[in-house]
Length: 488
Ligand SMILES: Cc1cc2nc3c(=O)[nH]c(=O)nc-3n(C[C@H](O)[C@H](O)[C@H](O)COP(=O)(O)OP(=O)(O)OC[C@H]3O[C@@H](n4cnc5c(N)ncnc54)[C@H](O)[C@@H]3O)c2cc1C
Image (cartoon, rainbow, N blue to C red):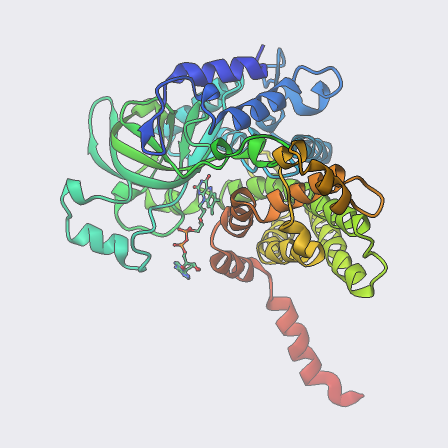
């Protein structure tokens, strides 16, 4: 059986003994019993369980390439429009389990693994089998992946990597992970990468080139290795989940804090059979675009963002109803802004699906421009959606008693003074707590930063859209008008 149950996934992660550091300590016990990770691991377990649930199995699983077993839906190479539709619906089913807040559900990087594995012709002959080998293992064992695609933020000057190269810095001065040695067994990678969401909580790590041009071959690499490879360390950010006490007070943080981590490669040996690309600046520059990896990932991301926007709209409307403000025209206008966002995102997603075309590797790839548009648009609009909730909820986001307050001797006062128009105080507070946790708590604030940046810097993504957009015929149309309008 190529699909695991949640319990099997969690046991496997616990058994890896990955080197995970958090709050100044290395985690020594089971990750699933650590307060920072237990919520998100349980949540991921629930997603894996849907693969075995009779009601959802046909949607969230596909049939393995050899036709014998079921596999995670994201590993299925889409070849028809129906495949894309199924992929979207499956992603959205998973996204609904977390109000769209879990960005790295196992369909995200699994989609990248599928895309890589379906495009062996892109890679140098000597590495093509490796890519397919990793894909086949991932399918067979239902593996999960984190990824790290960018360099540490130490110096973003355009000349930094060139400078580092020219100065032949000592190995001890290396910052951005690079290949420092080649042996019979493989390449040796040393340095750091950002920012692996769920780093340490997955079976493997996918490492791809940063996307910025490099003339130094030691930065041109791609590979996937097990998370417990010797020398691999995950340095986690401050956890949010371990600091919360219950689901009433922090309904999202308690279950969906994915954790993000800096990944350190301390002389990590990457075996040759795990190397996808090395020393090949041209392929390194083309890996996202030439096999449409970026577009396949965007299809997953935009599908999830649609779900998240549905929740934002549902929350906004429920908040407004709970304090009876829906009749004010500016409130309706604000809620309409969320409606407009939702409808634009859905329209772009469906248009991408309908405009899909097969690439040279046989993958049916959604149309790029609508997805690039959706992603750039959402990066900018998401903070405004959050602001709308804040504007509607006003002090309701601050006068937020905890579950303990309700249970205390002042509980009666709270019941009396914090009730809603048509709801008891507990229901109203629970609703406001959900909105607060999505938009204002440390978890919620990270959500905003996530939507702004997770797919890359908004400025450079807008530039990419500009460059990809076919403007030629539009300019010709204008020129044509200028030349011919005298005849009116
Ligand atoms: C919550 C969260 C989760 C993430 N998860 C992952 C993950 O799982 N895996 C992963 O690989 N990455 C992940 N990322 C990283 C994400 O891909 C980056 O944040 C994004 O690519 C931007 O890079 P940066 O953060 O280094 O910003 P920087 O590139 O340092 O940008 C900082 C500022 O400088 C400007 N700037 C920098 N360079 C240029 C330039 N060349 N031209 C113009 N302006 C420039 C930017 O516009 C920006 O305003 C995550 C990020 C966040 C916030």
